[in-house]
Amino acid sequence: MTVEGVHLLEQLQTPALVVSRGQVRFANSAAQGLLGAHIVGQDVRIAIRDPRAVAAILSDEGGTAQVTGLSTGGSVWQVDCRVIGPNERLVSLYDLSERVSVAKSHADFVANASHELRTPLANVLGYVETLLNPKAGGNEEVRNRFLGTIRHEAQRMQALISDLMSLSRIEAVKHEVPSDRIDLVALAQEVVGEFRGGAQVTLTANCEDAVIAGDRGQLSQVLRNLIDNALKYGKPGGPVEVSVEAASTGWALVMVRDHGEGIPPEHLPRITERFYRADTSRSRAAGGTGLGLSIVKHIVERHRGRFDIESRLGSGTTASLMLPLKEA
Image (cartoon, rainbow, N blue to C red; front, side):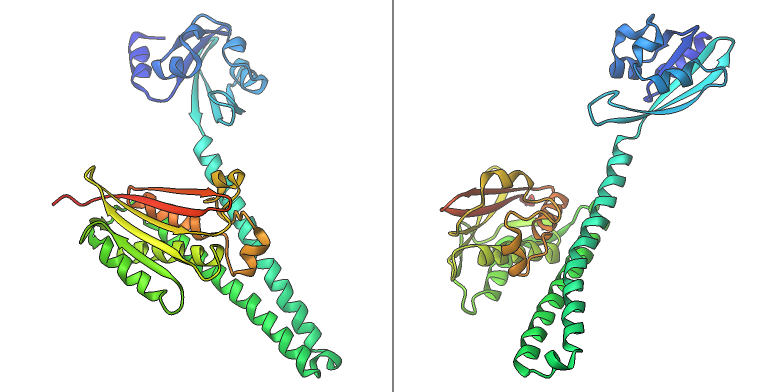
């Protein structure tokens, strides 16, 4: 391979190797960073320990192969081999890990959403078919009970579809940094006021205002979701405590605390995953979709903030988010 060719390959961020007569003659910096500098001079079967990739590299026509675990355990790479001369091959390595992960996430998301909709839909159809039977449908007590169940299941589907659409809208703008001037104290007062019709929701603040750059609609949704969760899964009747603090470090801290049973520690690492529920039966009975905390996490991340949940069994749960204050 010419000096110009070697210089060109060295400028690439894509890992690239030149293999001659089955040995690695050259590896650019990206390839050495991926596979180690020791691969230069090695037999390619040792440098890349994958039979399919080695077969493509040593074949007369070259070819491609997909290998796993080349960099980390779950990584997926495409090995692309081109013939560039007698007994000489150019091997390029392309990282497909993110693409494969996104595709799997989308497939899992569709499967989970379909499952979540299938159950209430099956219940609705089952009760409707029962009501169509003159014996059951003619009994007013049975009819009213079944209609109440149908309404509950329909509301579950409506809430799920609403949250799915909300999550889709959030992901569509996740790379756009919000820029509206939002006073978190005033916003928290407004949202807390929506829950004071019987619920014990209180608000405290260590400042008159805490101004950030944000999206008012999305931040309102965060507060509503967290307060609603605290009321559903906290101590019956409350109290739920909301606090807003402006720290000298340039961050605003918003916390929503309940005094319920708490969340078992083994569930905390996964509590913000889509459709994950710490208590499946209780969540569904309360009308939960399993998407609320995932929505909160996505919104906070869009605002360049941090979201965390702390909980102790018997002592309640505290959901907190930190958001950067807007410079004066």
